[in-house]
Amino acid sequence: MSQGETVGSLEESVGYALKRAAAALRGAMDAALRPLELTVPQYACLELLGQRPGLSGADLARGAFVSRQATNGVLRGLEERGLVTRPGAAPHGRALPVELTAAGHELLRSASTAVRAVERRMLEPLGDTGQRRLRRDLAACTAALGERRVEGA
Image (cartoon, rainbow, N blue to C red; front, side, top):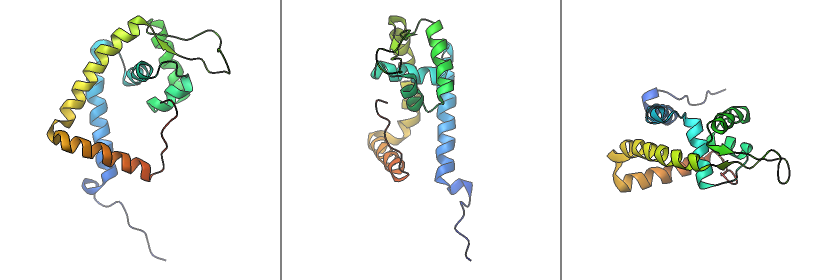
């Protein structure tokens, strides 16, 4: 019985490099969003709603890569701040469509600008060609593992 190949050196592991990059990005986004009193999951929900109004909580959970329970807490907090609204009853089915308020749109503009500055700083060493290549390569890696694009997110 032969053993399979192991991960080997962490310095050579693509998965470890991706995790380090994701952790660095998350830390920089946390710092950029802190003055706006937003967390990364809150920002993710605002950005998703800004680009796709009317998503349900389940859609937002999938799009923000968090659990439905966590998304419910995020949405409650955003509602309390007057940044999003949800109807009291579903217009059809069980899903409650979430919408940004005027205050939500305004805060989203500031938050999106802050996050874009973080992304620019992260990607600057790659140049335009390298950035396009990175997006293409990451999409190919995602497709190779069979992840499907979330409907509506």
